[in-house]
Image (cartoon, rainbow, N blue to C red):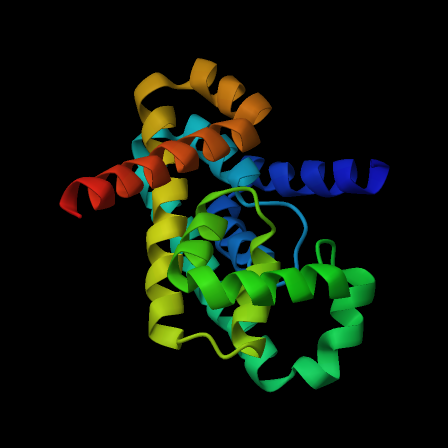
Length: 198
């Protein structure tokens, strides 16, 4: 836990430097394939510091995350036999059991699973790498990633732009719960539409 806290503080420290935006891109990039701390931590801090740039920061975060997701896909697709032991040993969220479960879910849900993982606190690195290993359609994977990641980061930016510090504190404390609730509501809406149309 001390290690995670140090990593969290290190990520947050970039908000007070002139390199906050490039750091946001790199952290979003890394988190999509191997890094532990989500970029939302730095995104929140940057948006609170410069609310007029909130949507620019969200765009930077989205692009970094999507590019990182494609790199994770590439690792799974072309290098898995070389890097599998590293991921199972050192990258949080990876285990052979999780790997098998993700493969089974992909068979049933593909696009929706990637989208939900891109939006929620599910360790996205597991999704990007396994999508490559299992040969998920790259175009579908990319579209789901863009929609899920941009929805997540722009929603955070919009709330911070509108409400500032109070909503920032609220998001920081309850981020995981908020994304899960929103995803349930979103999927429930899609399900309702499908039922009505059928």
